[in-house]
Structure formats: C-alpha cells, structure tokens
Length: 133
Image (cartoon, rainbow, N blue to C red; front, side):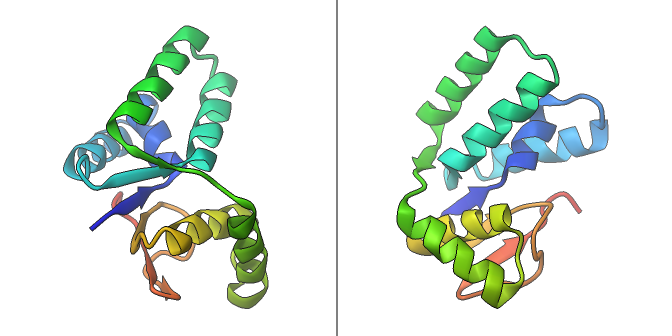
C-alpha cells in the first residue's frame, strides 16, 4: 500500500528546531521508505520552506535529487487542480490540502500522512493520518 507524504514531514526531518518532531519525521520516512510517494507540489513546498530557512541551494538540489531517486514522485496535472477546487467546495478543505488529496485520489494512494488537513477523516476513499502524534 502506497502512502503520500505531506510537506511538513519532509521539512521536520531536516529542521532541528523541534527535536521531537524531527525524530518522528525521520522515523516516518524510514518506516514508509518502500511505500512513500511525494507529489511535485510537496517538492516545491519543501524547496520554498528550506530556501526561506536559508539552506544551501546545492544541498537542496542534492536532497531533491535523492528524494526523486528513492521515492515515487507523482505530478500534479490539471485534473488534480480541478478535483482540488471541488474538494474545497464539497469537503471544506484548504486548497493546498485539497490538491494533495486530489493527487492521492487520482493515483489511488489510499493514505496521506500529514500533520495538517482533515486528519482522521476518510474522504472519497483517501485517509488522512497524522503520524507525528
């Protein structure tokens, strides 16, 4: 079973500002290493956050390359954007959470591991779980 890893888990794995969340995020990445998927949205958000935190850009390029070699990267297409807009209206989700959900839905990924979003809920067959609790 595949899982979609949300952006904050990627950020926490590299950010030593909160050691508890960092440890949990690293554990999640290790535990799901053979099942984990990322969307291109996750890579973009991760890059944006790490750049704001002042990371070395060459390091960031290496990390993105490593993620793309180790994990399945799922693109965001027009169909996912359309599904996301529908989810905002029908499920009262934020747009960015809805877009991640739409990627999982269209790629038949049954679980999203996220600290945000409607954790604990199943929406059209996709379950939001918070592995950091």
